[in-house]
Length: 399
Image (cartoon, rainbow, N blue to C red):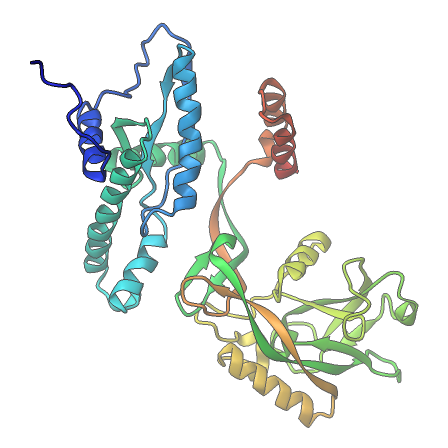
C-alpha cells in the first residue's frame, strides 16, 4: 500500500516551523531580477529599528506591505520587496544603557560600540526570524544593513556629492537638546510629563516713563536675560498704548541691551496670565517661531552643560533649576513680584532619560530643500497617489 503524502494528523507549531524552514531554505525564492522583461514593481520598504522585540503593530504594518508584494507578483510583475534593518540612531544606545544600567558616557567609546554591535546583531537575527515566521516575501538574499560598510559608502558619497553642489550647509539654529545626556533630539524622541511649577507675575518698568508697571507672567524667570521682545495681542485694548515702547529688563544682564521693545503679535493668548508675553531664546517652539518670523537675533542663554551663560549676569554659571531659584530671589529682593501661583505644567523631557530638554542654538549640518520645491510639485503631479488625498500630505509638508 502506498504511503500517504500527508502523514501528520494535526497542525502543530513544530510542523509549521519545519514547513517554513524548508520554504525559506531557498534564499532566492523572493529574489529580485532587475534584468527581467516583466513590468517592475518596487516597494520602498522603511527599514525597522532592532532595539528590542519587534512590536506586533510594526509586524502587522509589514504584513500589509507583503499583501501588496504578493498581489503584484500574481499580476505577473517583477517585484522588489527589500529586506533591511536600520541599525543606526540612539535607539540601540538607549536599549544597551537600560540593559546594563550604565550611561553611555561612562564607557570607553570602543567598548560601548562593541556592546552595541553585539546587542544589535541579536535583535537583527530575531527580526529576520519573525519576518520569516509571519511569511514576509522579502528579498532576503539582498539584505541591507545601514551600518554595513557598503551602505555607509553609498550614504557618504551622496553627502559628499550634495556638499560639493552647495546643498549641505552648516548653520546655527535652535535644536532640541538634552543637557544631561549631552545630545540633540528629534521631536519623536521627546515626551511630556506633568509637574508642579510656579507661575510668577513680574513687574516690568516702561523705559523713561513714570508709568504703571507692566505685569508679565512667566514660569521661566531665568530666561529673562534672553528676552528678545515683549508681545501683546493686536486686539487687546489694555495694552494698545504700549505698542512701540520699551520695557526695562527686571534682572541685570551682561553684554546686551537692558531694554526690549513691545510689539503686537497674534500668537499671544490674551487669557493666559496678564496677556503680555516675553519671547525668549528659547522657552518653547512659539518663541522659536516668533524669533524667526520677526528676524530677531537670539541670545545663547543656556550652554551645552545646561548652565546659564554670561548673558545671564548674576545667574551665569548656574544650572537651570538653580538659576530659576536665584532669579526669583533677585526679583523678590527688588520688589518686582506681583503674584506667585502654583500650577500644573506639561514639560518636554527626553524619552531616553526623562530629563527636561532645552531649545538651544547649535551648529548643525542641514540639507537645502526649498530650492527644489517647484520640481517636487511637478513630480507629485506626475505621480499616482493611493488614495488620492494622500498627495496633500506631501504638499503640506513642502509648505
